[in-house]
Image (cartoon, rainbow, N blue to C red; front, side, top):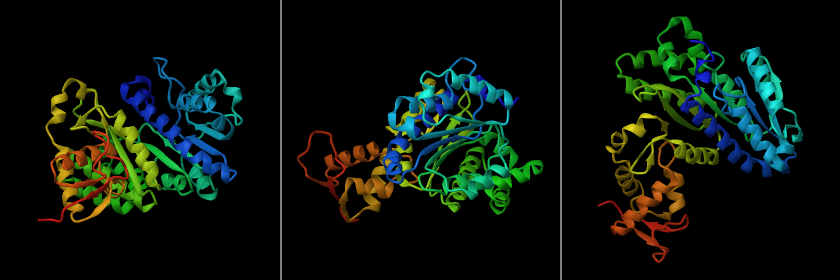
Length: 369
């Protein structure tokens, strides 16, 4: 299989991936720009494995979606610096042609920079030595070559810098037991964690292997300052195997909360309204399979137990509880409304618009029985 085959397929998966990145870029930029203006700084978008500008069917890839956003927004058109890199010269030449043909591209104050470099030690050292402006990084290699925990750390260490990266679970799962690619696995997880993973994975079933591997990369991200990470899973066309994850990492809880809402909307399925944080075309065909578990019932029990005897605002409940869980703010409000209706909690003010639970509504959780 060629390195470009995933990109060439222009599957629904790759389009969803591009949509998530573009939506977050817009939301991230709107938060960052006012602060960047005060600091006299620009903002940046860097794509280290950008590939051609369009899929084979003509649909737009991530670089074009980003540039179109920038062209349409006065602040972004003045402040945004974009860097697109790919080691394949044909990809870069194709991307350059497509960018040149974008309407309004000459209105950008900073012309897109197009590079033709292999991602490795040279690029990592460059990032480690400079103080970057607020930057959204997208790291999307076909396999895992070029992706390392040190690279991610080098790009998120500065203020306002977040990262999204392609985590090819299928190939990494196989690579962890392949001595020929041990160096790549060590670069991705760290040598000690990679060695430990090999031992942990031996007795595990496929589902357990996946949870363990994804947990390991999230723990590795924490060690480099990426305290808030969020994986979004993609399944193959049959819906029976994970192909890859798109993993978001940030030092800031606000970025995490924004991305959670974006990924929730792009999820192909829900359970009791709780997003799956995956795109799986099979959920459209087999929706009943995704309603068998009862995650909102679990959330009810968690809140009653963890906040027993406390009096706090709804927003405080959400902020203290949602990190590391797939619940979004709406799920918390739905559960609190249900608990209030059942008389299990008391909420103030009690007179509100029907079926609403504002951020500032106070909740009195009864003590444990």
